[in-house]
Image (cartoon, rainbow, N blue to C red; front, side, top):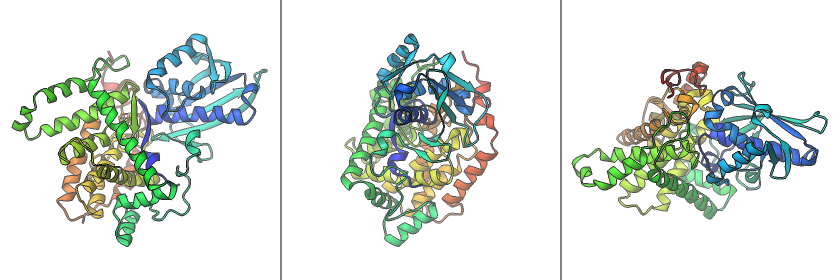
Length: 469
Ligand code: SF4
């Protein structure tokens, strides 16, 4: 598989890339296949089965709504977050669902959306769709797996692309002829040494195999502006997050405190940490509320990279006017590191715990920050390695199956850790004992050894020790 930076950074909606974005893509794909196959007119009913982690934490993560919206033809990057609740309410009130907005079939969640405790063979996040004719005979059946970060595969292991994405050159899957292919940290460093390019320049050259340099830059800036928008909205939103815990949104209050007493920063040299915490929490509160965020590389971990990128723009560049080249370098470097995780390990909390989400985001952000601070390729690889090494073993135990506790604060901690990892690497010469590839291998092995109850099932850890109100 060949992965693009735009496969890792996807504009979508909260609260979960594996449990919301992926299932929405899978459901829409099934509806599109019905349209292309037997035809929507032949379909008189559909049922959906959710397996494993999608069943265990699907309601808290919005999987149920995502599947309905996907069948109705919505796409995560295009749907207006404000239109989600009205669309779901209409389906529930009418007890019908219009496949791709065209073919209305009866649909009640109790009867047609089924939660199965067991897992399907390929991955803990499995879905199975069925379609029936007028006599109730099954005319189509497809299995999908949402394998983390909004990536979806089918039962044969083939990547399933969002229908809109398939029309664009440069989506993952087109690996022929990349000028600088790499699959591991060692191969990325070898490309840098052979060509004299930085990791960001290697990535840019590969991206330009699929799309023009101007289009790469345009899409990178769209990613940045969406991240910045999530920070802005998170800093302006008050009240409580959805769900029975009634978790209070804190970013707006923190933003007000920090903005209204700037002189306090002069007395406290670590006040910058408050701002980094704010950026991360603002994004993750927005994600938990089902708002517009960038999967980076997952939604649960969507706050780490924007927080460190805002730290770079607001504190290291010295003003709020973003240097677009620096932002592009940051995102391309983060993407290069994320690809190595995607190709050799996992981005799925259901597969490897939170190591694969906040851990990977921390690693990507650490390497990216080292890059824009002038690090060599070796220092960048070292920063990425440190960013993961100290997240090894981190479990996924969301309280109430919601991407709120511990996820929101965990992103803030991941961002701070990434900044420290970059600084540690930049104080060295790039030589180090544990390579990025070795830490990725260790992360994958640790995830395989981790008990299922610590992998996005809400059956262990904080999820069982914190009582929901
Ligand atoms: S604990 Fe980590 S992996 Fe699990 S849902 Fe929260 S952010 Fe995602």
